[in-house]
Image 1 (cartoon, helix red, strand yellow):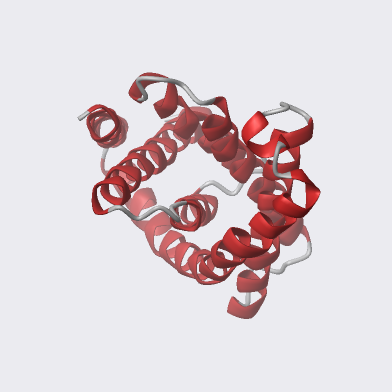
Image 2: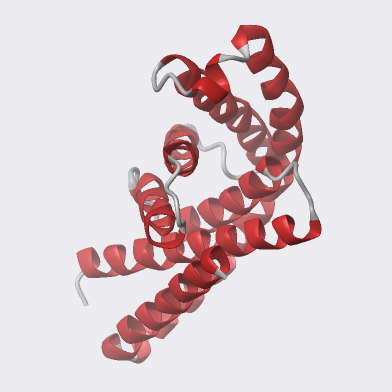
Length: 215
């Protein structure tokens, strides 16, 4: 199996896992009446992205995973909200840059450094999202808040997300470092079984996502 094919399959796998788990999380929180869902969704995202980055050590791969995950919104939601799609892609883009910078400076070796990367990147993500929605996409829901309202949202919801991301990135990186060798061993067993297995798991999460959004 070529490296390019392995890369594409891995991106599809982790993007599908993220999209499926986010859809399931939204469905569960909706059913139990939990309204502050943004930090929990941010945690799901960073867990998947951090795990994936230890398996796919390539700049740009994290963003590509976000694009796959965002695809669930088109297929699953009865009404497409582009702010939700942008939220997924923006988180992936911010953490792609954070991981790329950290890898160059060797900041991924110590848990405290990892936690701080997740903490700071989460605030950046929330700031980029809120400002872009208000002043680039001119979404009335965000524009009407004004700068003070946006800042309040960043330092409330964003703070919860930053704390969860501090822990989530450490857990995700640790999990990814354990999964990477297992996937390598699986590849050695048989290329066809590996490719079909990843696609089957990906399909399962797509079905989970669509079911969670629609039912």
